[in-house]
Length: 374
Image (cartoon, rainbow, N blue to C red):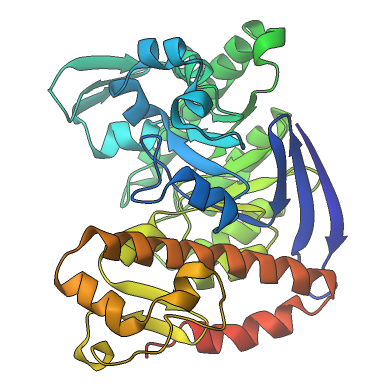
């Protein structure tokens, strides 16, 4: 994997880059649609590639480990073949799901012992085993096992958690390097910055992650309601090496994407466009729409003619409103495709504006429109 910076914005820390992998190139800044269990909910792979134009998608180690399991993935030749997707895939280590979904999760130096949310069976994730699982998945970018520090938590807990994450990082990296072969050399491993809301811990963690000298770096644990997302992101980006891609995990709203691009982030993922779409919230170039509101029942204009794309330009707001109210499956599909098209359009526009050194002015202007409820 190689990362090159094509242009840096003169008015911010935003940059346009290119991640080159054996399965294709990834234009940055980029948004990665979330395909947790090997599927972006309700959206076929050909639509992701051709209409939405996603360069990369995200899948999840925890969910794929439980179903269909590594035996099936090994037999299929990896997730790419299994799901019919020939572009890059990034996998989260599953650590967040272990802590948030499973019952009776227990953390020790060895790893995380948890019970499946599906059948209650007991499993152990270690820094080494999550590498093996991601080897079976065949993801192009893998994540180390970490603990996503809970919120709220004490300084002492955040420090202890961060230090254990750093010890797990060394074990994961050592095992990854020891098990690298010609057949899996395309896979790369990213470490994750933790430290909760505590700035000195974030500084320490970012320095540790930078010293690991991997091809890219991730920033985790920022999805908490403290309002410190931008402050922590700016702090961490100032420490992580400039010449490597920075991935902000689980973020977020269109505003969060643009503000964090301005701080130097290159990669994002979030379930928001598909999850909110399935519940009737549409992100458009004119503002945010709740398509289930009565006002759209007889609005026969396209969902978003300015955005373009087949779904957004062909189907009317009234029709999508009807589908949502009647709970037709097509409604979830159209809303998901539209929202993902919007997100990929947004980062595409960001790349264009960065290239013209007009990113900050454009960002401040467009946010006044796209974040307004209409």
